[in-house]
Image (cartoon, rainbow, N blue to C red; front, side, top):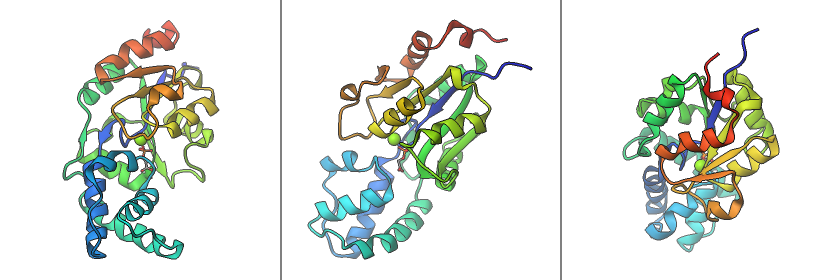
Length: 231
Ligand SMILES: O=C(O)COP(=O)(O)O
Ligand SMILES: [Mg+2]
């Protein structure tokens, strides 16, 4: 049997793609409909990392109108409808991301995405950003019965992509990603340019990078040499 390829599994929001602007713009549309002030820009990046529901709850609370629980779900539906239509208005891959994907892809790595964004949205965004075809699997909320930080989310992503779980690295921007990887026993590289309330350096990832150009060296220092020798 041929050996399965080493695999890199990427988080999406705040890791591969800078999506904060479109997420906050959608939140602001909902706030404006209610006559509420816009989310303060300084707070914005720290409230986008935990999904639409948390973003809406925190955004309304920050605007001085905390939501009663029964109002949240209808707003999530409205949010997703608007966001889907504007998913790549301003969102972009982070600098060097595509080049890094191609470098690892050319070296024989399998690539996958494991996000808590709904799978359909993740796929749509990556298609619009011209990166969807790089991934053997794009797994999001709804792909599996559980989501991050349940470590099975990462294990199932690796399995779906056909990668080698013994030579897998997670790349993420948040506590959720780091907890997911640790739970699955996988090493994790944190990017320090994403969306997190707690600086990633305080969350003890295996490596921290500040640019995608640093990912190759980080992976080389974590994975066995066999990962870099095509078989
Ligand atoms: O939308 C979310 O819940 C967060 O998305 P992420 O997992 O890609 O960071
Ligand atoms: Mg993220």
